[in-house]
Image 1 (cartoon, one colour):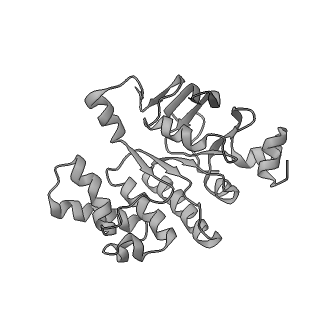
Image 2 (tube, rainbow, N blue to C red):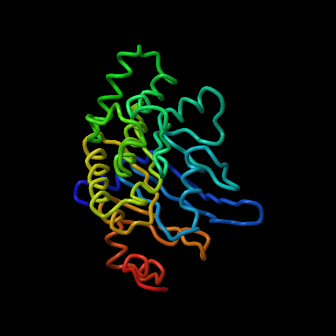
Length: 256
């Protein structure tokens, strides 16, 4: 996209020769890529290819069998103690279903990271949380419970909570999953707007083709059969010019 960060933009994430293995099952091997500051970077592929596992590996939840991940100049898996916690506090994560606490209002959900990781007084935490809800269009829903809002609003609230500590990098796991096309398009627009207005780097895991083309500056594609990465680049370029049969089938919605 025309306003996307260019090739000279510094990388904030560096993944090198990553392999994910669970027992005797290898999901993918030798996956390497960079994520540039301020871009919307998409991890895509069919079901079972290891997209969500790659996300968990990047944010420090699952160790790689091989390889390394550097985020903001720090090696995720060789850093321990206070330094590791300091790094993880600079990452925001929105899980597939929002993962909000059902007994708390949206405002209380967004306040939680602030209560845990800052010394802000209660009034200041509430003010920051309301501001984050405002960023995602949920100012009027601050006092509602998760059970009282729609699926699209749940996703937006999850993004607001991920933004609570002003992290420079946000990870979104299947943000459009389960949403109708209109709601999904609205969420795509929100992600684009936040990326450009805040300068935040987004790493988005999805297999939703419309969302990939709407929000992605660059992407990588994982493949279950190849057990690795089979494409990297601008998703629109891959759609129009890739000669790899699996990549072409994915972007053109053709049966394999």
